[in-house]
Image (cartoon, rainbow, N blue to C red; front, side, top):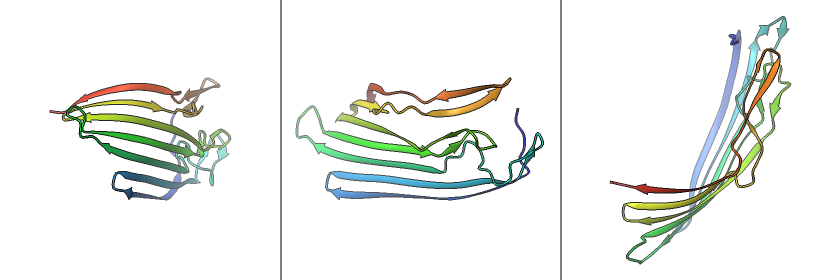
Length: 161
């Protein structure tokens, strides 16, 4: 069931930057902050004024370091090594702010080989196998949480025209 809140207030900020640390080394980062609260909201006889709005992470973070290695091979143009971390939290899952997800982070990495219009990437996501939730809802007095994806490894082959 969805309900409309009487009044809310949201504000926040995001900052992002890219720094070239060396000719072939780049660091990218971003941070976001959100403060979203109910100003007026009564539901089921309960007053939630002053509580955080569900599903809005208070903090978000992303950092990525990329190293490009040029090749003089006739088969491979360059290799890109990448490692990064993303994070989000605290996230409240209900209007009462009694269910929450603390800040969590995930580590990722990849190695990509480029050759003219073809690239081959070996990658890993959530390498630390962080356990986190992406969604919550309540139905017929039962709580349902959707877990985030566990550690994944993969290969991607791309063609550009």
